[in-house]
Length: 219
Image 1 (tube, rainbow, N blue to C red):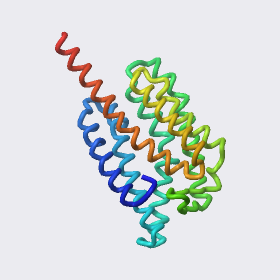
Image 2: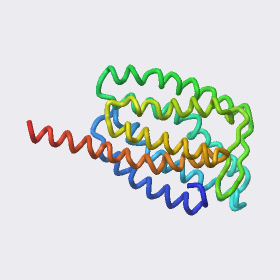
Image 3: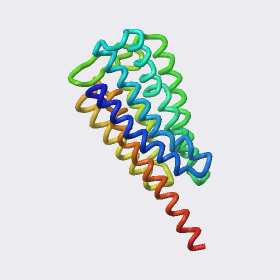
Image 4: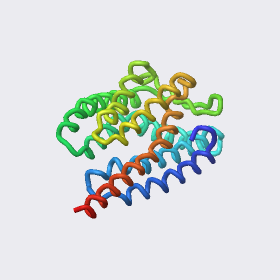
């Protein structure tokens, strides 16, 4: 989370529990990546817990920089690919998959640029008003943020599952709120929000399995 190492570790543990429960609902291989997102977000929050410990002087600068780099790698370098790909994999129809393909292309292009920027420029990590700020000269642009929102939220709005559209709305509202109220800590705060919202993914799989069981009974 964004307020202390303890909050990050505790929140990460709770979300990890939900993440494991979500993975246990998986019945098809194409669902694994999407179902793994809550657990990945949980691990991401735990990583930021170590960033907090580094900022508090309880870990060495080398560990702080390593944990910060890992946090940024997932938040900015991997999510633009993972989100559209995971949605594309679970879509039931060819039409839905074709509509999501452009977002995969956008996400891959953005991720490649961000990965270059994260290696080409140093990332400053510091605390500001009870939040962690990650500043990288190559990614700290409004254009990058807008494309990021398109890549990570767009596929959900085009999903064939109404529940995932609701997840997209929740993510977009969180992004807009963080950008408006605390843009300097966007990476940390939105990842916190996304981690919490990712719990809704369990709801998606619960509904899917219930619908499948009802169909079997009806058949």
